[in-house]
Each structure stands twice: as structure tokens, then as C-alpha cells.
Image 1 (spheres, rainbow, N blue to C red):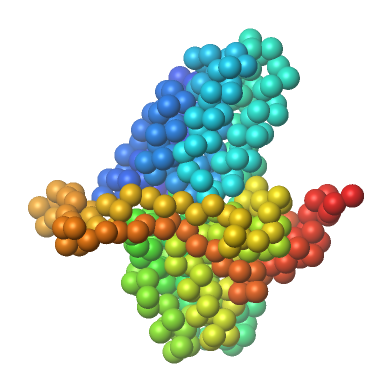
Image 2 (image 1 turned 90 degrees about the vertical axis):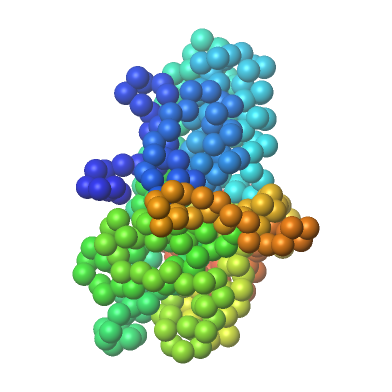
Length: 366
Ligand code: MRU
């Protein structure tokens, strides 16, 4: 995607051939700041501190974290240390484990002297794969957008609601749920996006709104609890979100509040789509509510709000009373029965074991 006319991805190798460039997403939309990672510890800190975030980008950053570790110590012990350091950063997005297992698989059989070059090669391939998956997801989802637009008699605008940020900032490029929005807008469809603010980290208000604005896609930021009201009044034609982990039976973990949007969508007959590259499927689990680990973060993310003062200065202020406890659950699980369809790089399927296996038959147990 482009920022101020310049094409960029969310992660890249710098021209020195080894440091890893990222965008500091904690500074957006107030400042567009690039940061260089030079150690595995810095990569782990960037993931934990949400300087980078979004399931696919967490996986890509972890892969490059292993590359940086191989510069310091490419021994078996060095590899194991890097894998466990990066694995402990955030618990819900399964892409992290997928990326680290991929690095382990390709690096373990090699001699330490061969590992550094192969690590960078594999991390780059993983990033390119993510970009290709997301572009393909966009194409499949665009057909669903066009169907919804046809159902509306191609009148007015197509109103799409999304939660959190599943755009190019959350992936290597294109995004998952936002990929079809870019394609639809570019194809001339009169698209309008309702952007859930997504408390407490406000990924919608800060990141999705910024991304869509950079691309000229019409959008309106709404408070998290508005979606149900809009759906009751025919103001949402479809919902589309990303996911951090989807079970083999189609239960979907995504940013806290997604479940309530899916319930409101079901009650109002609004299609609720989930866009995901296949590395977001956790084929080892079936029951999302009981088996997906839900991250709990610092209560200060809830009690404190950051924004820009009229002076231009960015400041953080406390909004809850001193002494009030804050429970900060970062994700929830939407059961498969509330999901109209999953949109993957291989096409669209029912949110069910059979649906997923129809697209990924190689996962069918022998
Ligand atoms: O806590 P975050 O910002 O990492 O959460 C991100 C999300 O929940 C996204 O919707 C999800 O990772 C899908 S991104 C393509």
C-alpha cells in the first residue's frame, strides 16, 4: 500500500541487508515513524509492546526476530533461546507459532554456519506468501461485496462494518478484511466503511481510519456499541473482520467485541464474514471458547487514554477513578454458528470442519 504516495510494506529488510524496518504503530495516526530492529530481543519487545501487531505481522516479525538471533548465536542453543523468547510475546495469534515452527523446521537440520542466510530467505518467503494470500483473499471477498451490492440494486452506497484493524498494517501488505475494501474502492464501487473504534487500544479509530484515509476510502468511526443500532436500521450491508486464531471447526478468535458484533449481525440478518490466510487456522483445536488462550493485558490500557492536544502534543491521561480495577481482555471467540463464511486465499467456505477441509483437503486426517 502507499503512504503519502510511497509504496510500503509493514516490515522490510533495510538496505544494510540485515536490520529489520518496521512502522511504530503506537505512534499512528499522529506520526509516521519507522524503527530499525537489530536484535531478537528488540523484535520480541516490539511484538509485546504492540509497536507491531495484527496476527500475520506478529508472525512475520517473529520470523525476522529469529534472523536477528542467528547473527548473534546460530548454535542449537541460540536457536532454541530465540524461539522461546519470541514465542512468549503474545498468546492468542497462532501465526506466531506457525512462523516460529517454520523457522525451526528449516533451520534445525542445517549447520550453524548455514543458518543465517537461510533464516533471511525463509522469513522473506513467508512475508511474500502473506502478501499473496491477502491479495487473493481480497479478490474472493470482492465477489461477496459485489453480490451484496447487486442485492441492494446497486443503489446508494455499500455499507461495510469492520472491527479492530485487519488492514495492511496488521499483515505484511493488503490486509485481510481490508483487502477487498481497497479493491472495491479502486473498482469504483461506492463503498463506505463503519470503523469500530475498538477500545481499549483503539486500533479502529487510530489505524483502520488512518489506512482507509490514506487510500481515500470513505469511512466513519463509530463507538464500539453503535454497530447493533446501525444494523437494526438497515445501515450495515455486511460485516467483515480478521482473526487471530480460527479453530479447525471454524470458531474465530478476534479482537474483543467481535463476538457482540456477530450476535447483532445474526439477529439482524446481516452477513458476518471472517477473512483469514490459512496460517491463522489452528488445525489442532476444535472448541474455540475453551481452547483458544485469550490474552489479558495491562489495565492501564483501559484506564488511560492517549490523544493529541490542541497544541499538537500527544498526551496520555487517566479516565477512570484512582482505585478502580480494570480487566483488560484483548480477544474473544465468535462461535462458528455466527459466522456466515470464512474467506481464505483458496476461496470462500462455510465456517465448519467440512468447509475448511473442502478448501484444504491435505488437512483431512488420513
Ligand atoms: O491486538 P492486535 O491489534 O494485535 O489485534 C489484531 C486483531 O485482532 C486483528 O483483527 C487480527 O489480528 C487479524 S489481522 C489481519
